[in-house]
Image 1: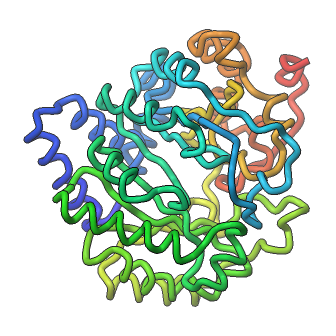
Image 2 (image 1 turned 180 degrees about the vertical axis):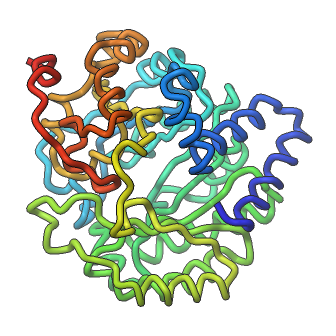
Length: 375
């Protein structure tokens, strides 16, 4: 995390403190310690494993698998799974099993197609939990953005992967460039009018062959959209090269990274390259994502979000640790599958769930004893 991001985070904490929401402020600090700061995270979760964290303080919940788009790089475009909305009662039943400090509410679907989604957000914000969501901004009009800002949604990342209309609509099939750009501009305008320092509106760009050439130019696009306000950009490479999208997977040349960083620095926009971008990966023993389980809309619990977008939904469900609609999360967490999984990660071994991980350096070998647990 760079100085600009730290300063923006500090201003947010001051505003939270003024509102006397001490729980929210504490949750922000814990998220920084256990997630945002790599050195602190590894100290607590690797050096002090397993005593520092005995139950996940973070979770990601997929609230729907419905989507109105057919994005060329998304597994949803190619899978055959029947779409499902999580109900508010199901969502509340999950949240109430944790003492959460942070929740991600984005899965393989368009969250705002779930009629209960706003109600879900209101519920978790009533508990002062940090909330992060990714969204295409196709549906986020003035009224909806106003509600999100009033709720104090902590991080809203705009999924927008191009600097031009032609490239954007080629990638986000079914979306409309002008409509989304209008919604983005309105969101930043509202944020300024409401003098909001709590919610952060940021950008997420998934890099593929069709948009690789526009990565540096994207800095100019974001600079125009943000209207002088704080924001940051996360650049991510495609996570998995499955058959249907293999043609879109690309390496990111160092010269593009250098040019983008130079432009971003000049514009005063912090950027981050997601962990799957560098060619040199940390050993899997450095993985701390086990602290942030991912729960499908149908209830299956998987290790984290990194296995998503591989178009292997059936595999993920087969090797899930359990289903929260059938067992309590605590029973699943303390079950033999989950405990053995965490131990293998800590020992630098690759569980079958992680054999295709694009984040860490893995060396998968069949573990018949472990895999017997799934038979």
